[in-house]
Length: 257
Image (cartoon, rainbow, N blue to C red; front, top):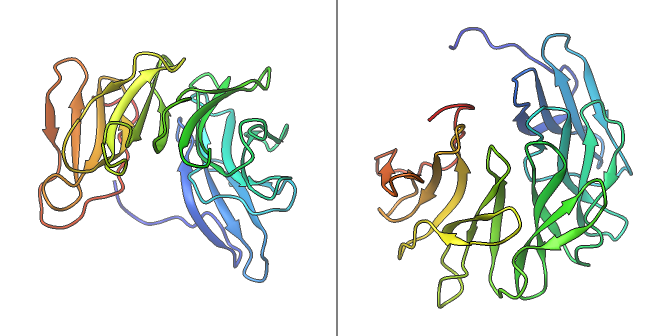
């Protein structure tokens, strides 16, 4: 509601890419000391001011936004792994049980993690040399599955539906030139892929509304990046912003329609 800002950190570190816990009680972000090359993942508890630092193997973390499970107990984020490539890491909110979970998916770079609402699986993209695929790793068994196997196209930003039954993503799979993105949804096992936008201009950065009834996304269909919403029940597309500038980053309110 505005008012006086409250400073959450007091050191000289460079702090970026903040991410609210689902219940609003904590913020995760990346922190790099002014005289250090090492990036930490930090969690600050808003009520107590307590800071938790996740250093891990001392290697680079980020740049994608840290992803929380719906209960706020687990965080997934990208970071350099033993391979020297970007891998997906998972830790509990208190920094315990930190582990690399994506090494068996491919030998190339991974990123853009999204935790299933119950925290049991993590979805992410992996460079497959010629395609960017969507993988899901079961955190209990370590099994990784390529949900887009056989599709030579780019896939971006997989995001779990609030009920965990589907994944939302952007992809060039329906573009003959293999470059223009549309917004897609598929079942959590990779079946029943559906193109929601199918538009001659670029659609990207899709996110679920809090109740899972709408998909909100960016589109270049009007000449600049504007925000649109697709209603999964009616099939209608609604323009949410209207100006001549670029509207890019947005955050649907949790639980909102």
